[in-house]
Length: 378
Image (tube, rainbow, N blue to C red; front, side, top):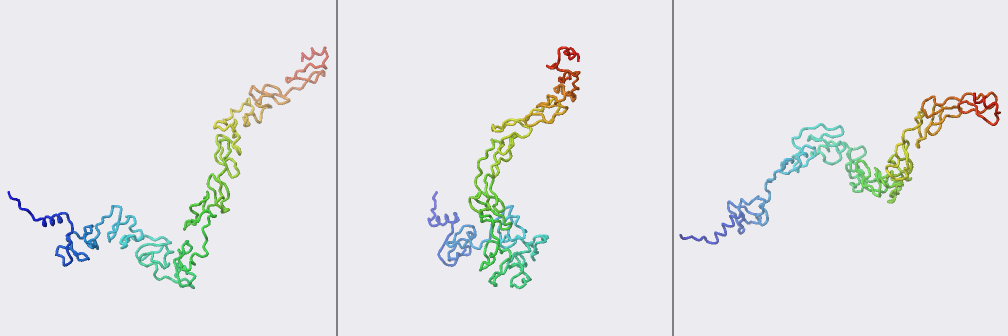
């Protein structure tokens, strides 16, 4: 079978069309199925607005309708722009065409807000400040002029007398008047020399330096001591290592230990806390152990930190209330209230004035032999 050959020129044309490549010809009138570029060259009409420039001057991609599809969590503006969905109807136009604030339900404005004609709400202080905050300029309609001034009530009159700025621009740290008078006489950021950065609303210091902290950088950071109010970079110095016998890690300015642990007490955590005994200077967690229960033979329930009985009752005395007080006799170790009884009167028939704890006469050098029998019978 004879194969008919196609001229090479037509093969080239077909290849170009199959690849979707623009066919550009010399300047002149374009065909009915062609688009004329700004420079006069022609491309196929199907190549216009295909997101790929085909004209040498890229005019085929100008003034094309957007084909952008917004995400589910976005709002599509009338002009095709995408914004976060929660920006819709927030009383602040975010779309370039302001379509995100159209057909929104009217909300109740707060007592310190101003109702715009478009239904939105703005802070009352923004009304009559010389700026369109509502978006429809309704916050700047019928504005009264401040007495003795050419500015509106919510405007600041610059010292030059021929310029007004919003009252909210007064003392905001940025000069808005040409003569900078809106920043004259303002309270400066007072951070005791440890910061130049303050919150524009609260006035509190931010980014305190030199180991300081606080609304005015007036306190040292934990671990540092000093007086930041002096206003020098060296006001707060590292705290000397606490000597607390390993029972605390924090000290005050004077070096006194704070929050002694492990049942210890004292400026250096050197003593055991009441109710505990031991040697806190050893520096271990077990230094101070609970004191054993008071052993006062039933005559007291009160002991000191060393376990010594206090306030012995029932005519007793001693470290463990183990002895009778003078004038009483008995055995306190028996543990009853009647252990110690008052001594009876010493009656030796005039032969002695010395009796033992039971009232029996003692044999002394002053007794005659013939009285021993009498003594032993007493």
